[in-house]
Image 1 (cartoon, rainbow over the protein chains, first blue to last red):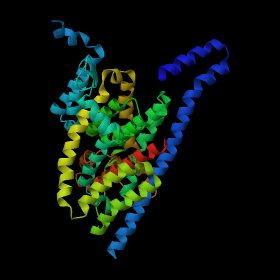
Image 2: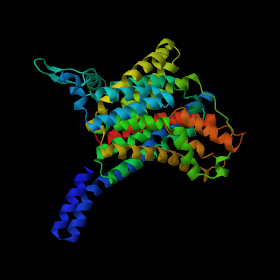
Image 3: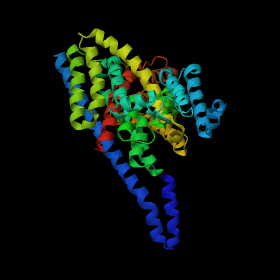
Image 4: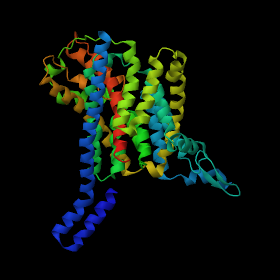
Length: 67
Length: 375
């Protein structure tokens, strides 16, 4: 978890290689974050799509009922 | 005579913390009237499950073998096996909801969607803080402001944090009258809060009221199949209410069923409040993330209303967007009260109720959509 990521990230300093250290530290966290951002984008779009469609159907039903 | 103090000497400091947590939850329930139907059983259950070698949990007894504990059995049967308790409660909740104010003013649907923003932003923040994506999604769903949805999603995703998630969800639902005004004032001006909205509802036929739960289930189920259990049971309860021929079942769902399941759900959830699972740094982080979710749900709804105002001739009071959170009916009452405070001629209640019940649907859909990402 968080402490494991931190521990493994600190250990990689011993590789004495800056770019590798940055990559190892960033990679596990970044993959998760990118996945979360994807969930956010698609999730909000999905909710608006479902709710929007339901709203349009309700509007149509209401108008049909009033005629 | 050792048996007299064996139990006392076995108590760990983490269990001591949980006795305190249980006492605080009970105090909040009784003294402050914060969601007492859930917080009191959870608080008492937290004490029960953290007593050393507690008989409410499965134990191995010398010469007897494994014995079943009632709370563990209730959890394994009522939540772990099929998420039965939250879903049965949803029938009762659906039977309690009058969707009339929403059906007569369909644009309020959009605020229910917008006010789920906090869920997804919290998933991102939880991921940034290092939580596994399933745990991040389970934590984010606290922003659904709906206990059964939070419990169901975290259980299906096999989150390690069902206990803190449930405590956070129900605690912050009770704190909506404190959290929302602060969040609303942070992103609105006095002039915006004073925007007057007249209420001119369209008529809603009985046919529309009956077709609504069927249509919602169908549409949500096709787009987000994982939401069928959540949305379906909510809408089933509503259909029982609206059909007009099942008044006894509707009364039973709203009262006896809802009360019975609520009684069992609270004490059952306490199974996930065992000290070794609950007394962790992650629990504190989850409490913070839960608050973040609620705040950004509110801000998301308000900002969406402000966005619509850029294109709309009839201005919307942005506070109505905040009522899109699923905490019904507290959020609607908060918005009404804040509206009156800015302009005593401005009654926003029916607009806010429309947005609020839309949030009930949207939060269940959100739960299904989040689950869908992991199927």
